[in-house]
Image (cartoon, rainbow, N blue to C red; front, top):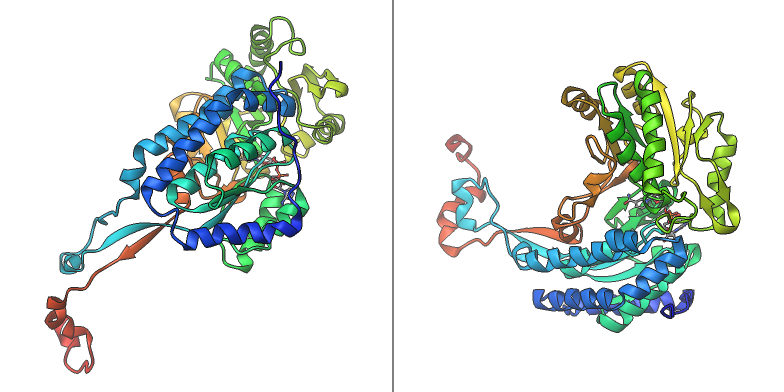
Length: 468
Ligand code: NAD
């Protein structure tokens, strides 16, 4: 029997200010400051996730048709691993630091950096990895000693409801709360004063969040959208490139912010690459993609129709795939040859299993076109020899990059992750998650015995300049 998932219910908007006030009061009372308290909460969160693995797996299946293996790899196992890493390092990271490079004459002031929690924080999650993108930042908030309110994505309501149940049951409710809802509830949350907002989602809403935060000078971390280029030169191995980039578009049916949005490929290698893509697709799904249990579905009808519209409006030529079934929200991985940089498949973020390939004459053309479409993507995936991939890294900016692979850099739990420019600002994961919610407070302590030396700073200044 499938486990019973709690019902998803919007939080009444009028309840929001009171809930925020409660967690703010808790922060100001200092309850979350002791490292021991934070470790206990992290441990409870770990067990909350572990005890409810089946429920979370079922929820991700219902929300996104996510295969259990993918849910383990990039949701449940992912956040459990992040909690363990945080637990193992928190005491060390939370300690005061002695800053390096302090001039000898200032050492007597015992300069140090204290790690203070930022305060009462808001985490807004996206739907595609509903657990990872909500619990991941929450781990950072708890570890740093903040209180937090989580607003999961309403587009993955089952995962949102299970996370609410876990947080209610396992964590201290005076410190951590979940608000459920969509635009009205998020707008009400953004009307509150926060000490930090951590937002994951699209660029458009990211701009709303940043503007609202600016009104109260609230710091934000923005983890935004993709339009990421992959670049394949003629010296790349077409089989490796095909398998790795196909993997990056079939995981979660391509609903991954860091997967490549388009592939710029040297004309010479294009035919071999397409052949290898076709082979890889058959290897990954021997009974066909639709019949496979290993392929997710598009999150909802709105997103399905958006993707279908992109395909309909494209002037490209479908080389592989193209079948879809609206009743099941199934969209086959679809390779389209595109020759126009203004094509919707290039200009818009597909955030789905669409794979536009764009033939180019050489690497310089690929670099020029990649920059002309989006000069600060979230990810960058150059395939080729070292000289070529170094040239791409030096000439195309991006939040992160995987050389000779699709988005693998984002899977390392201890490597900080984030965008640049319009793909986001700030980063998290590993130590960066702790830092994202921490204020590094510089402190000096002036001893009494230093007074005679300090007299140089006091007026009257007459004659003192000559001493320098
Ligand atoms: P979204 O921006 O539509 O929604 C994200 C969150 O914002 C949700 O919690 C939603 O309730 C809230 N929201 C939506 N409209 C709002 C509004 N008008 N005012 C206030 N809040 C609002 O994003 P999504 O559709 O859930 O996710 C897709 C986008 O997120 C893609 O662009 C993808 O690239 C990006 N993304 C980025 C990362 C990353 O780590 N950089 C990860 C996943 C997704």
